[in-house]
Amino acid sequence: MSGSADRVAVDSADAWPDDADEDEGVVVNWFVSEGSDVEEGETLCEFQVEKVSIDVPAPVTGTLAEITLDEDAEFERGEPLAWLQPE
Image (cartoon, rainbow, N blue to C red; front, side):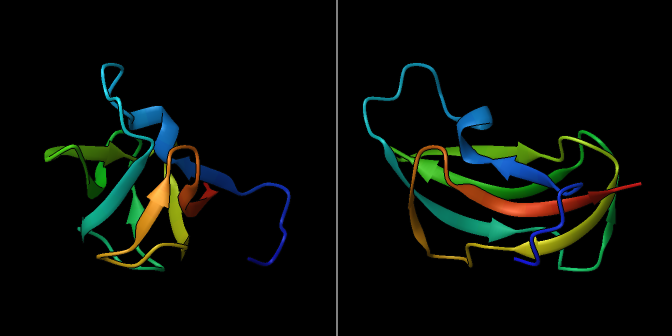
């Protein structure tokens, strides 16, 4: 992470199911790659919690600056999955 203050986190907690008992998930698939331009609401990746798949939308329009968790990575609720550079 470069530490740029204007980047926006793709926060796993924002997409976390309200009824999930588990606080750990696994990244299943990335649909876009670093450096790609994305639109707000576009699906960036999919993760799984308690055998339920959750699509993660882009919180803003911009560029996918950094993927912080690769496919098959385990993570805890609230960890950033990636960072976006807003338009």
